[in-house]
Image (cartoon, rainbow, N blue to C red; front, side, top):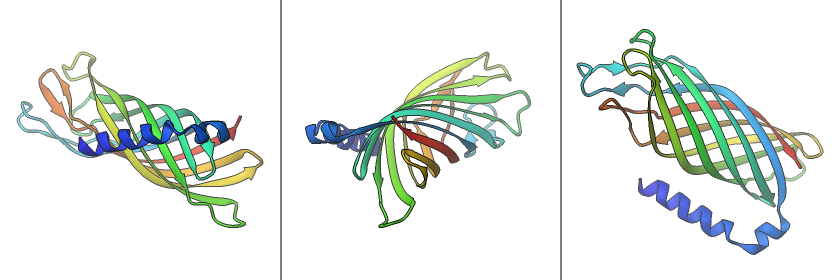
Length: 190
């Protein structure tokens, strides 16, 4: 929880810098990839360890880029089935504020980057008696990747992110909704 507060404080401090806003270039991005959730120990379902099937993750973002720094607002969705409980799915709708540091390489079309973000996640359990129950929790993410320039103002991004959130609570069941995501995306300067 302290990490999320620290990330938020740092991002808001940087966002308030007037020089960043004056020199920033807007962009839009979209990504899709695989979402691999960690096991989740339940409290009342006989201590059952829920094992998730690999699922999918989708994100869309609008942001500002200035030199080596980028900030964006991102909406995302991911869905995973549960291996050991038939007809149970967990989906997560996220709203995040992300910061990026681009590690530009001289005369290279490849730009590695680091990212961190914070926001909220609305998790929904559907099936196996959960009756479309949902839970909204604080969330954060950290990751790394690389952008590949394919045309002026157009990049293809390949990235890994670790998504973390407070435990979601469904009908008095607390479930971990952390996941590892590998994503491929398109970023276009506006």
